[in-house]
Length: 131
Image (cartoon, rainbow, N blue to C red; front, side, top):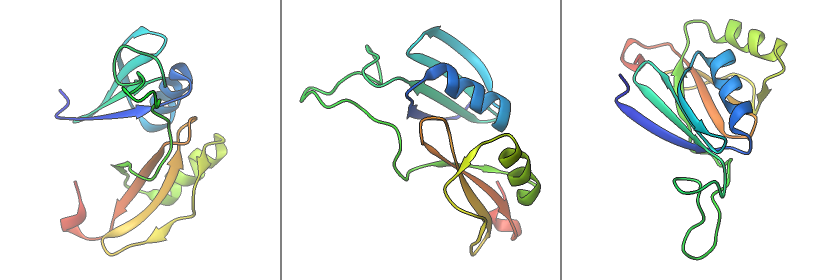
């Protein structure tokens, strides 16, 4: 059962479901409407909403502004072999924002879902950086 929930606004919920399921190992929990779905991977629940697809997380705000995908906030998925994961995802046509970078606790790269939302793939190089 998930213990953390993240909501992403996506242009196409079906395309997002396929991306997260086929490339990042998520399981579809429910998809009761075209503008909404809920996925899970381990302790993470990923809620997908289409912009303007109310009622719910995709609906317009009181001032009329509509949520939009993209930005820089993201969640991370730990992988055992980042280079192999990148090769596999590139071969599948997945978009990347950058190449692998070395950080203080490990290596990372940003992939984009079909709506441009970032997901960080992270390979820890220090024991304390592991999930």
